[in-house]
Image (cartoon, rainbow, N blue to C red; front, top):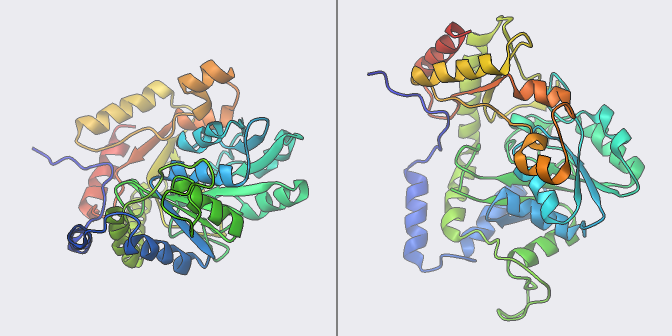
Length: 371
């Protein structure tokens, strides 16, 4: 029987395992030295002033909105082609999520559509670095400057990628990374707020720790806060993963190159266009079937891949067509046609650090045979 090729998976070595054992043996499982060490890894790697670890990327976005005093009556502009956590975080704050359609080739939020969506209630822009790449951040930051808006960069899928030589995540007022097991690095679960803004960092540190001020006593709570802390067990994994980041990037780029070689020149599908300013650390391998393929035909290809032991999925379901968003906010099919056409035809093929060239060859061959 042919062994299944997994869609994704973490890259865990004995270094991460021993680091966890060391924390367990230390007796300090939370708010210990590994937390500060993990945060320092991001400060040094990205060249930012502050990094604040938390228990997920979703929590980190929630912290950022609260630090920016964004809430009821405010609007935040973002993309409907993303994992749902990006827009959910806006709703957590009480603000209104305003969607703007994507560019048909890059699959990123289209800067040319942003200004027409700005109203007197708009307070921030939330570009998402989809699949490890990013939109034209120079254009987005210029729009924000003209309208005096804050920019938050969702880089949960883009650790290790760069734009115009600068690390993604460090291109805005604040950035957020996520460490779910399918990400470039993992801590099991976890997130990291990065910023050069002292107030955002101060508030994020306080709010993640039950509203305590950094120098106050354990039972002194200056504001309403949350338990968004990331335990030292998870931070220890993260430290070792960050020490291996260059190795991890090299592995992912090798897998990406194998796919590019095997998928090139086939007019039945396209790949994501990467802006020339981008130096990519890929998150996933996504193919988009041409418009003549229907959603049902795409789903048939997905079923065929699974029948042949090739892990796969559709990426992403449009956020505005998720049941909650339709029921609570009145969105309907046709509201964002580029996102909808894209989502109906995307297929995620296996992508992770442990893939062999033979597995990539098999996945690509099976995929093309099903078209």
